[in-house]
Structures are given as structure tokens and as C-alpha cells.
Length: 250
Picture 1 (cartoon, rainbow, N blue to C red):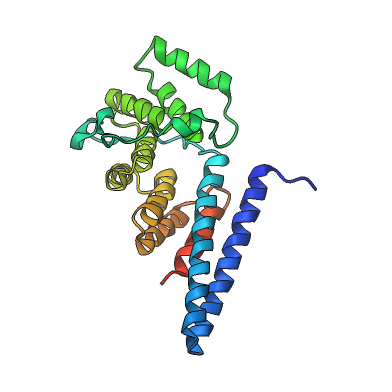
Picture 2: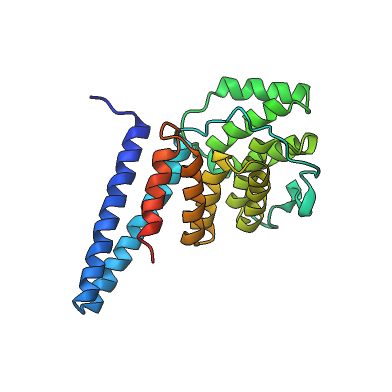
């Protein structure tokens, strides 16, 4: 039996998560027995494995690609992408180019270079082609080229603030640049218009858990994801695993 790289990634994340849960259980037993030092060591090791499993889960999530939903252009109401001080210049002063890792070969997953080139040509010919901008942002996000993600998402929203997919892409670019709170604002705008937006719920939970260290909020967001998602959706199993991680953290 041959496994794909993505499948092996899920297996590795599940193994790390299982080991972390076992250590968390042992930690509680040692606390009950009054072995404080041993419990502390187990707790630190368990937390370390949880963090590694979480980062691995994020990587595998991007590796498998982010599947756009057909209703991502649902209405968002009035407002521009520049509201709240949002602009390409809004990246933190002195922040290193966030797309540098992709240029250095840090791409996640296999991205069709020909498709990227075709979309870039479409955008060069027509800067108002928001459908091309949406898809290009999706591919740039897979490449972890967050600087380009920010640019195309911002341009798409400038043309049409109702592009929910581009707003989610913008949120992830903001998070990558260290602006977790602004990322949350963008997720909330998407979810205010579409509370069932699975991509926004998936990534909002990640930002809450990893960027804001708020396991309780992440748990609530991912529970909403599972409420609206189907077991066959790409992110369903991953969100279940993420929830398992948050439920072992007191």
C-alpha cells in the first residue's frame, strides 16, 4: 500500500497528538500522586508535542490545499478593503518580507506554475479580474508567499469588497505578518456575512489558538466549523484533531 505525502503527514500529526495526550494523562496521574517535579516534566513535554502537532497540522492543511467554496462571493455589504487603516503599507515597519521563505524554496505542496503564470497574465491584462485575483491568492497562500497574498487580496477587495475568499486570504497574510488582531477583524467580517464559511472558521480557530493562545475561543470556533461541515469536507478530520488538542489544555 502506497501513501501520499499528505496522508503520511496526517499520520505523523495524529501520532504526535496521541503521544501528547498520553503524556497529559500521565502528568495528571503524577500530580495526584504528589510527584510535582515529574508531573512538571511530563507537562512540559506534552505541551511541546502539542505545539509540534499543531504546527504540523497547519502545514498539512496548507499542503492539501484550501478548497474554495462556490458561495465565497456572497454579499459583504458596504465598505472597502482599506477600512480600518488596511493597506499594503499596513504591514509592520521593518518587518522582513514575509514571502521570502517561498522564494527560498519554502513552498507548501505542489503548485501548478503554469496556472500561476496564466493567472498573473490575466491580472496584468485586466487588474479588475477578481476571479483571477481570488485564485491567484489561493495559490500564493499555498506557496506561503504572504507578501503576494496580501497584494492580490487587497487588490481584489478594492475592486469588490464582497470577495469573501480574498478577505480570508488577507486575514492569513495579516496573521503571517504578526497582526493577529487585524486578521481576526477580517475573519469576523466574513463570518458576519456567512456564519457557515468553513475556510474562515478553520483559519480563525488557528489564529486564536496559535496567535492569541486562546484555546477556549479556538475550541468554540472549531465547534462551529463541525456544526456546519460535513465529514467528507477536507478540513473535518483536521478540526477534530485540533479540538482534541484544545480539550487537553486546561
